[in-house]
Amino acid sequence: MRDIASLVIACTIVASCTRSSDTEEAEFQSKQDSVSRITDSASLAAMKVEEENVDTTSFTITDSTIQIKRDIYPTVTGRIVSLLVTGIDARLGEGSGRADANHIIRFILDSGYIEIISIPRGTYANAGFDDTTNLNMIANVRTARGKQAYLREVARIAGIPKVDYWVEFGFSQAIGLLELMGYKENANSTLRVLRSRKAYASGDFQRSYNQGQFIRQAVLRTFDKTDDVMGQLAMRAALMLVETNLTYDITQYLLNEVRGKGFSSASQDRIWVRMRPATVSRFQVFSFDSSNVGRLNEQISKRVDPMIPDSAAERSADYERRLVRIVERAGADSASAPKRVISALSRPFLQRAWLQIQDKQKRLVTRDRICGLLMSAHTRAGDTAAVSSIQQYLEIDNKATAGR
Image 1 (cartoon, helix red, strand yellow):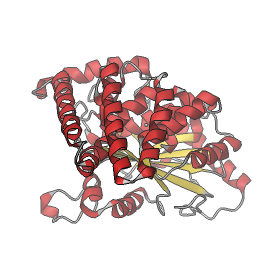
Image 2 (image 1 turned 180 degrees about the vertical axis):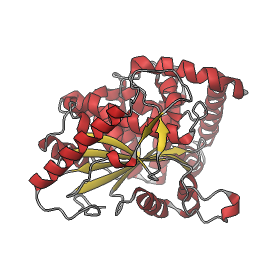
Image 3 (image 1 turned 60 degrees about the vertical axis):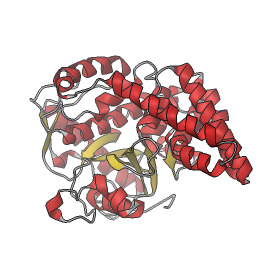
């Protein structure tokens, strides 16, 4: 189950048309020519990365890094579908938040290649502020100017015509996704590693690159295990965790298209991470296998923990208390004020807020309480579609929970 989920998170769930044409690099002449061009340039890319002595085994966080040059990436043409994956930094119950993680996964359908474009959150973008405020960055565009403006700015920075699909998820949802991916006992520490920036000399640039590499490694690790029944259940569960305009059928279409053109778990040279803006940057390359995340987290802790006033355990306990208070207040309103219940619990439900509760039994109790109160309130308000949506989520999540 976890194998397909990680692929969904990495590729299609961890962003509108179904078949767009992208010829910004060169006019597409034939499928065979495209395959040949990309294969040659991908091989060149692999050689150049090897020449740069990329360290893929060391887990020591140091300031010594390697250079990734801009000219090592293949040229891509033909039908391309672009999916934007956004990590949202929003507080409990808030309806909007900053776009802290921004990654475009591009499916090159005619040639069976996947390109990941990672954009640091501090990248300059017009968020509508005076430039003297230092607030004009891609992280703020979504909240300041709306989702459509955010999608346009991301496409501009990435140098692509448009974003076809989008996936958004916050901290709680990310924990659930990581657990589906197999990080069952260390989802929190894995997320901390992927969100960390203060441990690195290049800060947010290294963090963004790390996240792109996490996506790439997840795709290569799991792509060949995407067709069994349990995997299909995990895909549906992952899509239920996030906010997206993707459907299950679209994800199947994208995977089958690149698979049919030769993409597999052995396709080391068919998937790459590109940083935008396209500056010459220095990065470390880490393995984000579940067994290695603990070592990375320890190294990060040595650098970062002295700068943080309260512990992760204290922050987790405070979050749980705040969520419990929200649920208790909604419970008190349930008999007489269904609209207040809906107003109080709709965002925590969409955020899957209970997934930050580390005690799994308490987590399920809180989930069921939130869902039960919402279904009762929606029933009294006559919104049968909302009740059905919550019931569908519970049915799939209950089946998937056994694997988390």
